[in-house]
Length: 254
Image (cartoon, rainbow, N blue to C red; front, side, top):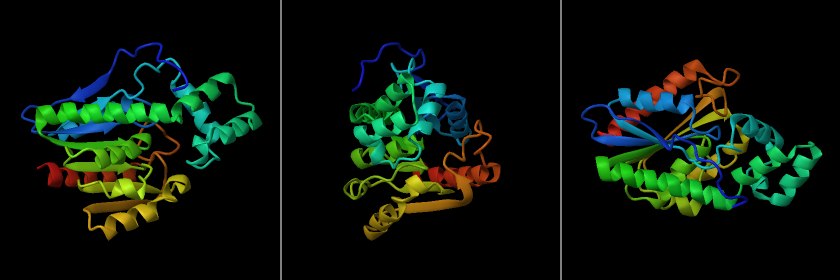
């Protein structure tokens, strides 16, 4: 990784556990971190009758991975494809062209470092294991960065009963083949960077006869479900997407 964790965020995990919950949903946050939006999602899950656990995937990096730094970092690499964002040379040229400061360069370096991404996946996997040991039935529910993680966890874990991904980067075909849990994949229509990989993902899933529910919401942008982002939030699409999510979780978790 580009640096060692320095400070520790006091909150390692947010959870909501209603009485008599017999299944748990592991909620994986967006690039913005474990924020009030994700806490609200956990509470929504609780209203469905399921427990929820949302790990702080940025534990130990909260001094750099602040909303302000992340916003600047996303603006700095927005014109690059997902693959190009993992190419340090291309990222360096792009950030230099945009005259990005050292704080932005450090933030981008962390977010797209493979070692850091492996750490995120490990944290998500550990949370699934904890939830499984307590509740027996577990689903992952991720958004954006967390949506991609939700699918990656499903490719590695046999403890999942369901996987939900909002605007998540589709995994590589070899990982798709390893997913055994039913999948709910929700995408925004105006999300070119992510959507480039969706056709191949869907083709692989359907070609192997896996349980897939796919929904693309017209006129929406990446992150449309986040009610704290007024420029992107879509109230009607969010309501429909949550209804679909609830139906899917009830079917798969019981």
